[in-house]
Length: 635
Image (tube, rainbow, N blue to C red; front, side, top):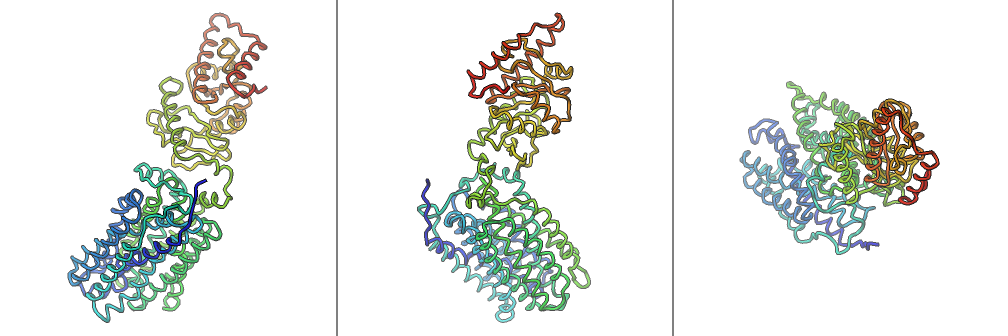
């Protein structure tokens, strides 16, 4: 058993990372609570000031994947160092050239470039230094640091601008970024000598891993949820002053409301992830915040009193910001075996893309006369409701269930890693062989391999065999026929699964549409024991199952009945199915069946063949099974 050890220094690593995480969000929202003042200072439009926040999202879209690759290949220490240095250098330059809007934009892009190297490392730090039951908490604290930065920007920027002016405001933030960068560089370490727990994620980045993410339905649903929730949050934080000013809220009050939203969100970012770890569940702590955000957001939309707006803003912050670290940790867990940095980066990417869209949406739908943004906020409420409906499809994290011993047998037995990839390749090659040997044509027919008592691999539906890749193969649960892939498994998955349940000796099944077998199946004629190789391998005869719609339970029931005591069955007006202990045996059964059917057809022109007698047929098949298999013939 692998040795694990928890080091107290994990807290030093985490704590020295928090300040620079806070700084990147201070830079992001520096101008959000002073939009109107900044417009006058630089003599530019509101959307130009909004761009100083929005460029963070644009740059993230470009830099997220490279940053994640660096984190997953070189580790978080070098990544965060790069992000910290970018923040310090461009943060100082932003203050030095504070009076020039163009240079400030360039510097803002520079600090924005550092952000993905910082925030994408959060789950990697948690995985490297913290045990499984503390990782959501660690991620929550790191995420909370970013929220602290947002609070500072919301509350401090209006006051500093009024008291010391724009230049000193930006200089103070620049000095702070240099100090934060030095703290991390001096005290952070990449990893402990002994890991703190099971490394459920791969640490080596592969480009194809990104494609795997988009074949995981649970992760896709999470991406949609983060697209909406993060995008709305980013847009609201960007337009906080413009959104509230039509209701008589001043810039200082807007900054306080934004600060309250984030401060209460900080509390949520501590409480909800900790509760998730204690409860040992992720899914409920994602669903409840989403559905409860709807009434809170509607209250924020239609309230006009300062105190009431502040209360609803706090509720929105608690729920949305509280679920954030849980969502990121959940994403890392369901993304297996994709590295943490990649899964985190993709989720963040969703929020940045939607943030840009929603920022422009709020600007476009705002009233030209009053600047009122109520319509866009109502649309956001509807989007949150749709998001909740999608979130209901999320499944509990298998990593959490495995760690607590609550995971079902079917999850424990779920194949993974190199062995699964090897089997996918074998099945893909078998599919091509199926086409080349003429046993099927186009996308017709299917082939599967049983991996254990709970799972099988099967070819997908609708993809020509000459276009198949190993990643197209679909892993299907034999018990409930569920699957986690963007590709749909063959419509005959139930036929394969039920045969595996009743014929434990079979580890491979091939469903063919070969010419001679299909001809005999169309005639609904049972193939008699005309050839000794047929008798030995397929059984005393090959029966015909009555016609039923492809994929139907009736077809499955009839096929299993006709297959009893045999290795092949004809499916009336359809095709055939053959099984074996492995792919090679299943292919042999297919070839022998096609030969037997051809012989059966041809002997009809000679007055009919003379079959081997029933007893000899039965004994030959039984001897064959005993000699080549541990399983006796089913009677």
